[in-house]
Image: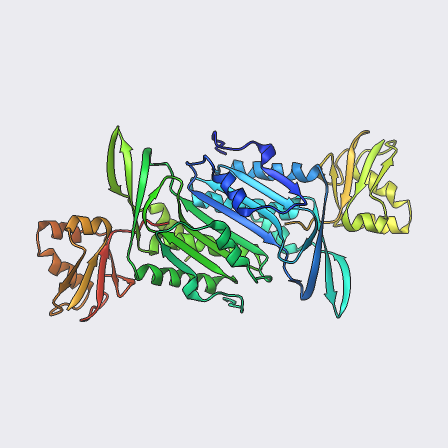
Length: 165
Length: 165
Length: 82
Length: 82
């Protein structure tokens, strides 16, 4: 089961909820630094799109539930480690007000084998989408009017997460 | 079906076979630049591991078949575009002599939907592994002796690629 | 006492981020929902929404989950992060 | 004439990277393999390896694939990139 070798960073460093932006290059460098056993690195980056359901998005505000957010993500990462042989993991999720094109979420996974890195990364994203307490509020321009609204959860996300169980 | 919107870079720029190293950050920046419709970016990085089949690896030399390499990768990317709704794609494969920890291969895929970006990226890697004419020669230290040998192809790679058909 | 917190659209609909509830007669999440529904028609409407999620001490739970004094209970809409 | 190229372990085993072959009597990849096997015992051994891959004009093909004058034919071991 989960092979936590000596190069595995501690769980506390695996998760960061932050308002600040992050550097993809720095995060990947940290995943790779001194880690010469894992040949595969898979990253996922989620960014603010300029449209959603046909509306023009101007800004996105992310709210979360401090404490539960970290706990739920730690649990998801642990589940991934139980399923796949992965090395290092990093999850960053930004909160607060974000603009079009901004990075929202980063998931990085290293492994000896690419299949494990791909699967664990997608699993973490799929579970994050339905289990981690984040909520998005969009400011959109609809029929010439600016309006704010909370995003609705997608059934497709629930369905996708269930495929892993 | 493959949705090649206006943000899609031309095919010629999608593939690079090179001896030089590359910058992950620069490659991702190019995938994202002016691309505000694709919220998902998945990257795969393959690096030289310090061991293989229990032997200590010192260097890796990559040979390829110029011309066929580019043609086969273009075909693989096209197949990915036919299966998934993806935006921009970039595949970089290094050739020549590489050291432990060096980047060997980069695959970056953007999409409106993360599932498409994950699937297309993994598909491209799986097909690259069995269809693109690259060959690895390892210099290993085995029982105190330095020796060079060509890597054997793995049945597991053939099996994995066949799962997509 | 039980600490109760609300998030996102729910917090806005109730105009309440955090409150305390006496723990007498409250055995599980469903008991809290019933009790809070008495507040007003608005609250009743919110808590009759079947998609509402709940957590106890930072773990997602269902309506039957027990609640004891000192617990932190959260109610929120389906999550939309990532 | 047909241009023939060899790669990786195959190139080293044959000590040959590129050669030309008269196209007379050569209809497909298998014909080339048979012809080249006549070179020596070493060549015969190499071309009897079932895992050997072949390409015509940069496309992977099987033994039945036709070959015509001017084609570039390649032989190589299973690929190991990525």
